[in-house]
Image (cartoon, rainbow, N blue to C red; front, side):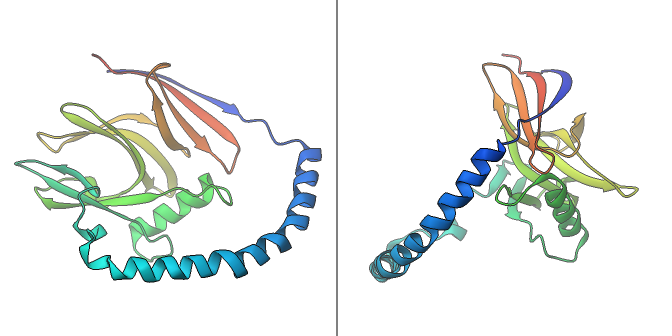
Length: 205
């Protein structure tokens, strides 16, 4: 695994003419959309809801699914849940501040926290973005933290065998979105500042 330097660039802003045209189109289409929503979509959804409730007993409920499990082996069982951004505890406050500085209206993203149900780890004490790269012996995550009133985030490696955490790179105020295997780059965005981050990242093998 090789980690390169971070590059940050500003993304182009939408042209003013296009913005004005979009506003005009929205103003014209909004009443039509509301009529369709009230008289067509809502009745269909109501009927669909009634049909769905009839067969609900045969469905697998979300709380019984395993897609919220980060890791489960002989030593650890670590689950995740979404952070309540309007909450009062420290994790919720840090997550909310990060969301305010990184997201823009309509570009919000998920922030989660981990619960170590089996085995003790240091994952439990921080919020995380949804970014994840799973390797053979480790999981790469983006951890959000605030120390000495400085908000930032970092790319970390969590060992599946020992539970130890290694800090790989400070990321700052960006939401890591994906790993481009072809370009071998991690890509992140700050929608509030309209900027993009790229990090050269080579996974061995």
